[in-house]
Image (tube, rainbow, N blue to C red):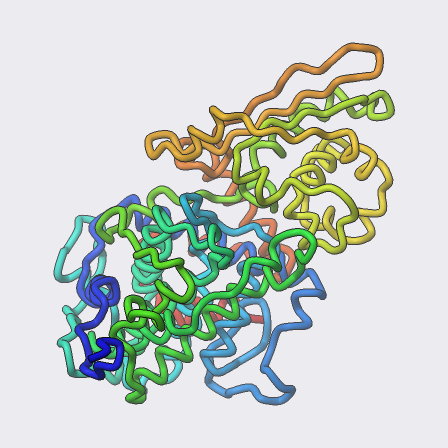
Length: 512
């Protein structure tokens, strides 16, 4: 008998069960994780406000077709849109990600864990505005109380086969922070030892997986329903990475996260409607994810799911740039005063970097659009050498016409420093180092400027927090008047008040 013809359903793949149990039952005990999650929420909102200033982004916002809004639906910060939670997740996810300015996770696979906020905020606001829908509060803090838990939360552990319903539940911001910690953890822990990029798949796959898990839990799913939704998320396969690389780099990389979070909410909703899943979606011989898309490899979970990723997440504090180049930008900013009046005398620029940067963002030739430019290490070094800073506007066509940028790019040599590559992979270091040195036609040279840990790294957290607040204030000022901006800043400065606030009330503050 051909075993592949055996129609007997196996037990669900272990990773599906592990993730489902984590999102439904695991309490979060880490004060550091919650403190960092508040910064992450604040920073993600800043990214959204800044993205709204770019027409290439705003043209994609709103309902799928004109007029298809939903009164009482989930809202999109910085806009007047009220949408079904699937489309709201796309809008929020696209805004968070658009400028490549939100948090980052670098491991065997990399990505941007706050991309999951699209699903989390959309579900939380939708539930809060439609309290009679079947939902439950996903927080399990009551099962593992911590010193910094400031409000009682009911134990809402799921049973294997019964939907957990709590018709009048509203999510507080504390619950959003819990969901963020868990989404960060799912995405980041899977990424630690599983390199989807090495087989040509895009890391946004893990956004869909993490968002599906937390969305299914937030919307009231049982253990079985969360497993079913997750299995469908794996069955969806993965996007190709081609839109992040030459010669095809384009703006899809800025809305791919929105697409992933919206798909996650859809899969969660249909699971709760009774749509079944596929227990061996990963491991099925011939037809499962492993055999079809992962070259027969099995996923390795490097550590138990807890709060590690949120505690160690990397913030993009000062520069909207692909993270492997963040320290190169810092080097260029430091060199600007020494070279700004000698740009015409530059003969050669040497950039030492890590292997992933060489593979992902080392580009020569014409750059076709902002998405191409913010993934080119030469461009990201040239601009601050000229201007002393790097902003999202520098990737736009008008700024890119400056002939000095391409002139400097042509003089750049990007080389891998083996120590940087080794330290990048070392779990005790996790550095993202770059060094830049400039050589002039008269034979002189600048000093070699090296930065190993970027601003926003956990090792520089204390230094970066005041700058994150500056970023938040400046971003709010682009959308709201001083009074509204001040109220929002004051709210985020009061952790206890923020944690207890219903999400629907926070969203009211954030919409036009």
